[in-house]
Length: 291
Image (tube, rainbow, N blue to C red; front, side, top):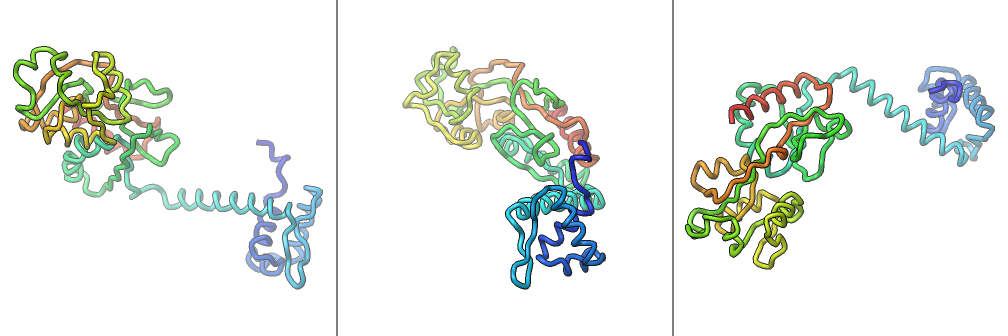
């Protein structure tokens, strides 16, 4: 940035106070300078821009159109500066660790494990931000993110935390024993899909299944898909990480498994992490290794 292209910051600060207070006198009192100094700053800005910024309006003061435009810019800029200074002074200690992640992963994989984290680190607060959108901790207000995909996101560190091996599951007893011998035999059953899950659509079409068949049922979230599978409403394609507990408990049974190594759930982090976020990231990776 070339500072020669910007007028005096002292003058801009004086003008911002005048624009906010609509008075040279009140602005001068706020800034603890003389009224003459404030007026001089405003005149200097008018000369610098070659435009009138303020004018008398009866007993008060009014901004011109150009003055209103500059007032908006200076107000936003000084408020941003003030917030930044305040944040730096207060530091980030105590701010909750915020994680953006797919809703089903939050509900089924992470939530049951969080008690273990809080037993180890009761002083660290954790906020979950479930979302189907692709969160970027470099730009969004998140410390960490869980993404489903191949782990090849430019500029981000991605570490696998859960397998995305595909398994076809259903409530025990729903599928006849004779139909379990080949995947194609399951075409005569209703399938349960997440409406916007492109990966599941691609899998279905790649294996000769009609994703949009009338007999199939579609739900807005994968959590509802799994709930429907548990209730016996149909056959479901799932990532093993999300249904392993149900399989272990016998709530669902595995009908078909297909290894799909490139896809998985990844912990995504920026290059720098604050200490609390690093603690949570390390815990999640340890937990994923154990499971």
